[in-house]
Amino acid sequence: MSNFTFAIKTSILFFPFVALFFTFFYLIYQYHKYGSINCFRTIIIYSFILYIISAYFLVILPLPSLEYAKTISMPAYNLKPFNFVLEIIKNTNLSFSDFTTYFPTLKYASTYEAIFNIFLTIPFGVYLHYYFKCSFKKTLFCTFCLTLFFELTQLSGLYFIYPRSYRVFDVDDLILNTFGGFLGYFLGSLFNKFLPTREKIDKDSYQKGESVSLLKRLCALSIDFINIILLVFLESYFVYKKYISIIWLILPFLGYFLIILIFKKSLGMKYLNLKFQHFLDTKVKTFNIIIYYFSFLFGYIILPILLILGSYLLFSHHYLTLNQFEYFLVIILAISIMIDIISLWLKVFQQDLFYEKLSKIKIISTINEQP
Image (cartoon, rainbow, N blue to C red; front, side, top):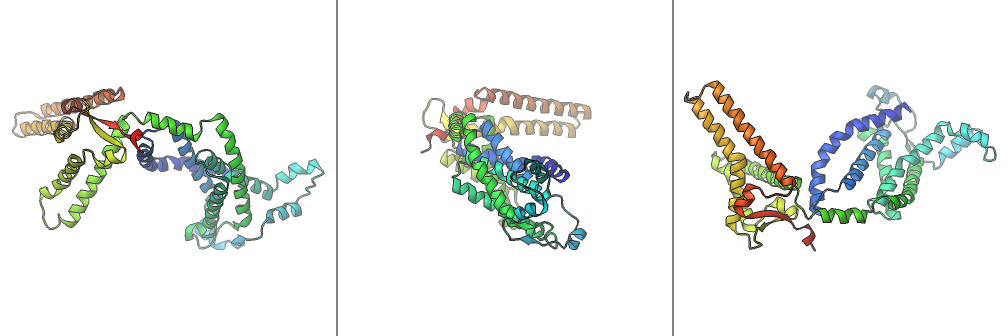
């Protein structure tokens, strides 16, 4: 039991780091496919990740020391099916006609290990049937593959980190775990009766996807930012070594902006099913997009930088004292933060911002226009 609680506690501590790494890709995929983030779907997906981590840690933990692993002399595998049944019959007084022998038999190690192996994969079968809509055969196959992965992990000594396996590769585990997935499949049918079906979750997601949330905008910007950084990296690797000039680092930004002007959308917008729309429902022109991005960059990046540089120049020429310079910096940062807060507040209520009003265009979703 102590090993069980240790594995669960470890998985809970490890889960936030996995979730943090997974979240960005999850947001991008959900916005690409559904146009929105469904809270109930998110709970299902993240609980599934926590379950997989917990099941994995239950299989590999606790880890022995390398010195102890070298002294292990037990067999590395058992290929005899239903050996646990023979162990139970041989080492207990189990009698199917005598109920008083049931409880002592349950306390026997082979018995509760068999029960544990069944319960280990029941949630897996539930998830596959309820949310992932897997067929019966596919559920059994996936459960078997998951179990085989766990058993090979043990047989390989945690991918050959250890000189030999510190746990037994057991064919009984394959049988019992697969049976657990079998039970989970039928239990998954019950979840459709009192929880929203996958079809209902998808339908709600598509309806919500018609709006363009602030988070969706940030995801599109993140994709664009990553693409620009990759272009800068590639150019610096192939070109910048020979031609050292700041112009060569500016070219990727100009090239990416040229792509936006040509296709009337960025790669981030394209992947997340977004597009520009004119306030008057007329054709979006290149001029509108130039005003949109220039006013956006000017309001949030260029203007604060110019104010900071201006204050620094005044300070360097002794027009400002150190205290005055620090005072100006605080005011500039406070104004920038206030602008960001106001923008966030307006976007929460789907209000047009200054750069949208100046350019007369805004970003809308096309998720429900997809064939």
